[in-house]
Image 1: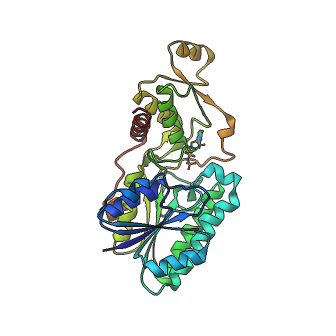
Image 2: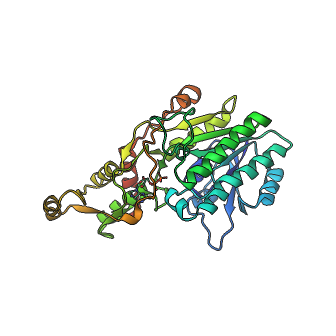
Image 3: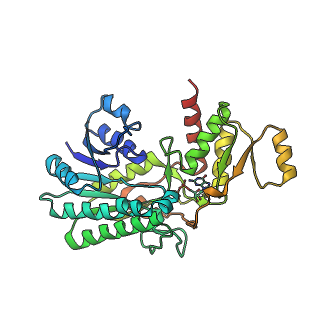
Length: 341
Ligand code: GDP
């Protein structure tokens, strides 16, 4: 029976990963941040439901190195999935130091602990497409040069490169999953996908009248989170450690994502900026107007982020199945279902 430790178990990916590992019969340990309020809504069902494996939660902090070391020495997990840290790009401009501490320095501390550990361990590090930022070419692959354009991307680039250094210098089994945006009904509500699908569901249910967004022409390579979590598991079962791009290979605009989500719930959508006459006509037909608020614009945007996951396909037999507009449709359906008893 295998033992795994998930750092960031209360997040979107952590909760899906815990589900998959428990179903595989793993003993799963999760690190939960100590806070005055519980933040366990995404894993509450796993604490009570019967599973083949066993789940134990530890209350501590990623940036508290000693507590992390103690958990590792006591539980001796063979696999560590490091998914923890402030993950919102927009927010990383507001709190860059916390973002770099949690995503950068804390990863270095973890690597140092693993270097000294008296038994072999495998590490999955959640790197991000944001390490590429403004890449010279699209699509990007594992050989593309890092060029982050926001504090989050800088922290992830630092941590990803250190994983490579510890792999090469000390033979540590460390893998970087260079994951492009991956979404689900468990995505935080301040990410654009969830904001759109939850907004569409609430409008359909008569609980909200409009959605305010930033840059509608922004494009992202959006995939389905549970599929990406499967790739994380596969990386640690491979013979040798490596870095893998996880992506759908198709970029979709915020506008296109929103159109798919609203259409799925039978709502007609009009975009601010379609011209006053057209907007008035659409409004008369009952269309929902999607408004722009400049406060949601980023100081700098990552551009042309679209990934080439050919290596994951050939080495891990993994590929993304749910792509952009399908992600929007599934999320909109799930959000609406959750609102209607
Ligand atoms: P990110 O790719 O990790 O930054 O994920 P987000 O979901 O936060 O943002 C994806 C893209 O949507 C970015 O290019 C944003 O500029 C754009 N976007 C447009 N409107 C919004 C909005 O209202 N909120 C957020 N979070 N992003 C928005």
